[in-house]
Image (tube, rainbow, N blue to C red; front, side, top):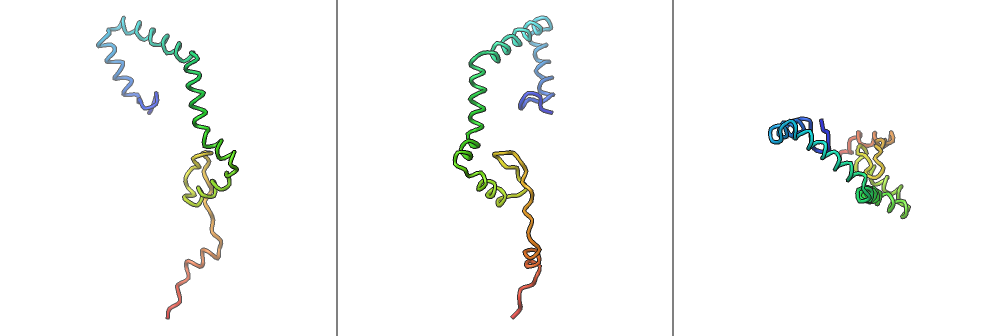
Length: 115
């Protein structure tokens, strides 16, 4: 189970045990309090807000390009052709499988003419 990005539960327990060993119980509480204040100050700062806004804008660039170029249908068609079971990397939707007509299915089952 992932807790903070790539850090799992066992890593968090390991870090807490190291903190108790290195700092001791009293200093660990003070250190955690100071760390919490610092994290709160950083996440409420204008720099953090600008960084989050920029990150969102960067993630939206492919969608904006597709919308401005009016090629959304072509992108969907290409994604379906490449692999109908994969999620669309732009919209995140799963494409339904492309169903072949009855004629296409029977054409493949027919044996080629023998000469």
